[in-house]
Image (cartoon, rainbow, N blue to C red):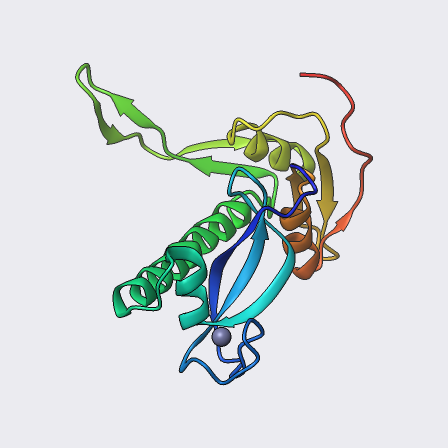
Length: 182
Ligand SMILES: [Zn+2]
């Protein structure tokens, strides 16, 4: 990720009222604009409330109804991606030692059915959390464990938005970042 802000993208609906782009009550609806790098990846280092009209002008060059609708569609998409992201983060939290899951079975021409539940007792919540992390396919380098006062554990990639999410849930970092190159 570069530290150069290359542009802004609409990422959420807000009801700020005043547009921070033009300083007026330009819109009926404001959207939260988040900074992104030159690859279009949102880093959220800078955010601002813009009217949907100003956002449409910025993103598509016009304030027409179709451009405004496209801005709101971008917001919906970002919102869905965020919900899916949060769900995948929360699926990685170990609540006990026993991991239960199903596997998709390959039938020769495709993945046909789910197996009966498979249960593994990892012996510790941390080992379970590590196993859940392993299934994501993310590299281990830079990852660390976070622990909740109630005993739940999770292994995080260490990315800022992910760590912030677990911290909001009450998890604190309990191991140093993994320094073993994959
Ligand atoms: Zn405006």
